Image (cartoon, rainbow, N blue to C red):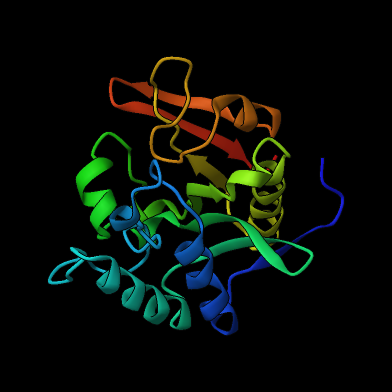
Length: 199
């Protein structure tokens, strides 16, 4: 475990740091045009938005971070970003493009229930910093803050493929289990895991 990791909530002041991390960090098998900047998991309505190019996604990311539409946490080591976790209020993200395309198997709470769910959508870890528990540190911070903010659950969506490794940065099932998550629902499209925050 790396001892000098600092976890910071994403704020508008960190927008340039955030896009620079995506600019310089390979992901999705290193295919440059696939850089997502995490604009597909956010609280914006995707209707009418153009996500087709890297340049468009980068510009949207800057705008979204400055307006609090993308939410999550950055892991820093010696002043350098080495990890990212996208975590947002589930009910606010039901119109984002990735939810509309990929999450039809996930149950949605009725508004009148008053149940507050924080969703963990993805992680990106710098290649040279993988397997150093950075994702776990990010997840711990998500859960701690969510509990303090009055959420009832933190929810995650690792894909049910092979050895439960995510093909879309959803995280490892074992990592969630170590953090106190359980399988809330198993579907043919993937797992929904939850950690209760209130006893």
